[in-house]
Image (cartoon, rainbow, N blue to C red; front, side, top):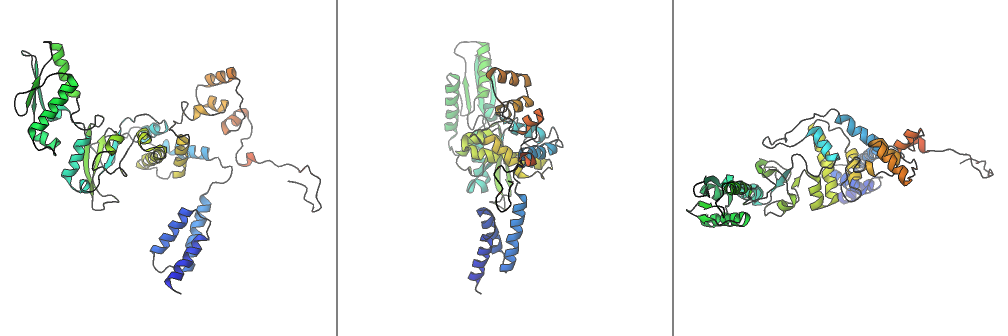
Length: 407
C-alpha cells in the first residue's frame, strides 16, 4: 500500500468519528506529524479521543450554572486576599488573587492597578534602542523627568533647567537640541497660556501676567502636570527581554503601569495582534465584545492559576464569560447586572435588596412563572432540572393492537 493510500485511510478513519470539525482536523494533523502510525493505530487514537469528548459533554437538563458557581466559588475560598505582585515583573504591582477575581465578575470600569503587556514587532523586538523609542512614545514624560524647576520670587519667574542628555534620550529621532527645547516651550505656552523665554540652549523661563505669588506657585503646579510626550494615563514602562512562542531566543516586551490600549496599538513598532491589557472594558471598546469575552476567560484563568487553583475547568469560566457578554455588552454578575435583570421576581429578591424588588413587583403587577431554580426552591416546588423536569403520564388514547398503551 502506498503512503498516499495510508494517509487517505487514516483521514477516513478520523472522519468517521463523532467529533466536531476542529477536533477532527487536530487529531488528523497530530497523527500525520508522527511517522509510522498504522491505520489500526489511528483508529484506536480517534476512538479514544471520541470517547473522551463524549464523556466530557454535559448531560441534558444538567444544572450547569449551579455547578459552575460551585466550581469557581469553592476554590475562591482558598485564595489569598492581598496578593499584589505581577509574576516575573517585581517592579510593577498588579492586583491578583481574590480582589482581582471580584474585579472581573463585578466588571469594574477601571481596575485598581491597570497595566498593559505590549509586544513589539520586527527590529523593535530585537534591538534595545529601537524598543526604547517605543517606550518613550508610551510612557508619559513630565517636566520633572526632563530637568529642574526653580522659582524667582523677586522677579516673579519660573525657571526650568533642562537636562540635555535626558532630552536626547527621550527624543532619539530629533537631531538638534534646539528643536526639542522649542517643542517643549510651545507645549508650555499652549497649555499654560504664558510667554516662554529661552535664556540658554537648555534654560527657559516664564511667569504670570500679573505679579502674584499665588499665581506663580499655581504655574509651577500646572507645569508638573503637563505631559510633553507619551500617553498621560501611562506613568511608567518596564522593558524586559523574555522568551516567547514567536521568539524562543528572546525578545523585548514592555509592561506598563496604567493602560490606554487604543492609543498604544497605533504606535509604530507595537505588535497589535499580541498586545493586551487587564481592563476588559478597554478591550471591549477597542476590539469588540468577542475579544472582551476572551479577555474575561483569560484573566480569570490566570488569576486562579497564579493561586495554584488551575484545576478549575475552563468551561465553567467560559460559561461565566458568555453570560456576562451575551447581550453584546459587558454586564456584571450582581444586582446592577445579570442578577438584577432576571425575569423572576423571587430570584431577584433572593439576591439583594429583597423588600425593594418585592415592592416594585407588587406595584407593577409582575408575574413569576417559576421557571428557574431559586424561585422553585423558595416556594418549595421541585426544580425543573435533571429528574425534576421529567414527567410520566398514562396515554389517554385507546390501546393499540400491539399492546402499547402508555407514553
